[in-house]
Amino acid sequence: MKRSTLFRLKDLSIGFMLLFFLVNGTESHGQGKWYKLFNEQDLQGWTAKGNATWEVRDGILVGEGGRGHLYATPVLKDLEIAGEFRITDQGGGANSGLYFRCDWPQDNPDGFPRGYEAQICHIQDAHTGWLWKPGKPTGKATALLSKDGEWLQLKVKAVGGHIQIWVNNELVMSHHDDEYKSGKFAIQCHNTGMKVEMRSLKYRPL
Image (cartoon, rainbow, N blue to C red; front, side, top):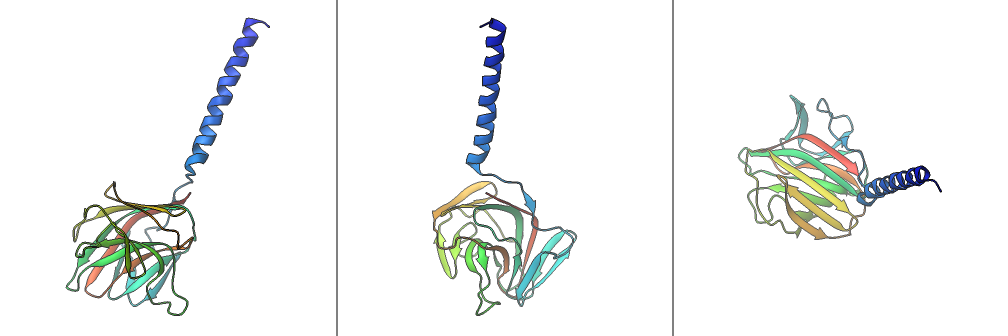
């Protein structure tokens, strides 16, 4: 075989190997395209349950005035979701959360969601970054990295039963739990006398 032919075959082999690693590397991570969950203009694609009032002000989603949950449309299994949140105490104590793999209870649509919650709260032991299930702190956060009235970055990754939560780009919680397999996203306004704000919320299926 001529040397030029050998070089061409070698180049083709290298090209196929690179393509193989690129394709399989992407598949092994299972990372899909990021999608906006909030259009920064209105509540299209969201469903409110409970007594809280939700509106968009200057591109920011705001919830206040009572206890309630705002549910997004997508239903996912394995996922990542990320956004920025701020809770402010207005006399009643501030408590919120980002729910995933959840839905409203069929017997009480205005009740607490059935699913997982990435806690957002600065005034209790099971604080921001903890993983909660209904009424139960489940996965411990290693540090409290948020304060009242300040924006925080929150990211959640759930693949099978492996769940991770980041606060301000620091991994604070890793836990295994496989009770809830799939569901919606939701944002919580826990009580009167507080305000929750959200912006730049995006998600991707994995």
